[in-house]
Amino acid sequence: MGEGFISRAFGGRRRSQDNTALPPGQYLEDGFPVLSAGPTPRTPLEEWDFSIVGELDEPKKWTWEEFKGLASEEITRDIHCVTKWSKFGTKWEGVSVDTLLEGVDTAAEYVTAFCDGDYTTNLPLEEVTGGKAWVAYAYEGEPLEPIHGGPARLLVPHLYFWKSAKWVRGLQLTTYDIPGFWESLGYHELGDPWREQRYWGD
Ligand SMILES: Nc1nc2c(c(=O)[nH]1)N[C@H]1C(S)=C(S)[C@@H](COP(=O)(O)O)O[C@H]1N2
Ligand SMILES: [Mo]
Image (tube, rainbow, N blue to C red; front, side, top):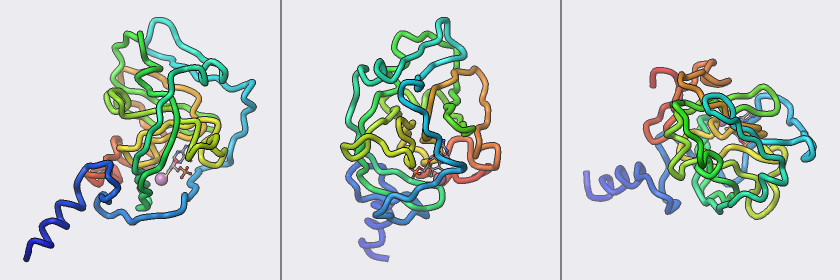
């Protein structure tokens, strides 16, 4: 067992943004597969809004115009789907969840992202704060396509991609954990690809 094995074994599990690492059990995908549990909703931008509800004093809400006026960031990250494809170096633009939660004082420890369509996904609040999650509205310099979640989707690239809720319309802050769509069907409550947390009990 030479040095090559060792550097491969460690290299393959490195957490990095340098586009060299695949989490365990994943393969590299060049295209951009579409995975949707239902039809693509098409909410006109005039009717779209984004809200923060639940465990906070004053719920927050932005229209599309207001949302696009918030400070945005460019994000380049690898993404990892539980069906085993990974895609390196995807480029997004969106608003950090930290920006959306500015000034919010909450006892909540969890969030449920809710969407147009019936999809939900749950996350510990600490997994979407501290520069780890965004609401993205552009992909590779273009408005986000409806099939990939446009006008806006959650982007939580450090967890399996089912946590990156497409057509997201808001975050519900809760003190307790509410399993979302896939989580209720047996997917892992956290979904860390580096720990291969695919299904409940992994
Ligand atoms: N609203 C909604 N968001 C969703 C899904 C969905 O079915 N509905 N599928 C999830 C899953 S399982 C994955 S892998 C990614 C797929 O995103 P993509 O279609 O842009 O590749 O979206 C996630 N977000
Ligand atoms: Mo997925």
